[in-house]
Length: 224
Image (cartoon, rainbow, N blue to C red):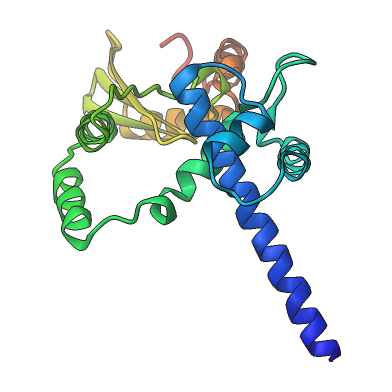
């Protein structure tokens, strides 16, 4: 009997979690469609959840505590937060599973991408085709990104390519004409210096890094 009670409690917990996700899904769907905060009565009227408005209100309170929805005004309904959208997107496969053919087509389409920018362009085009809606992609804010690695590649003795890789996967590159010649040893010193100053640091602090690099540069690289 004790084991049966535990199973029953576990089933109730799963059912409550699934019901809360159904409430979140309803809030996301209605808010995207109307751009208006969503109330519990609206959810009960539009969606067959099999529970009362009071139960939906309790579920919304839990979702709000978890940071998945927010109340823009005291008397208003709820709107999804970024975290709520993220959970909704992560569970899209459960909402509408893709067929094997769709998965293969997506894999082939994205496999031909040549870099991150191309992946994003292809992804947003594919999303628009699948949903038949307008799709927009936005890069992470670079000022909030940190540097993962900076590679310095000599193109010629007096010309370098700087490749900057951030924690978000963004890759940026610049070609720098030095007007002077660096030896392989000096390039290696410069690479170690730049990575020591930049790696793991936020991009917003780059002016401070630059001053630090110039102060710590070996004599052979100073002023270049």
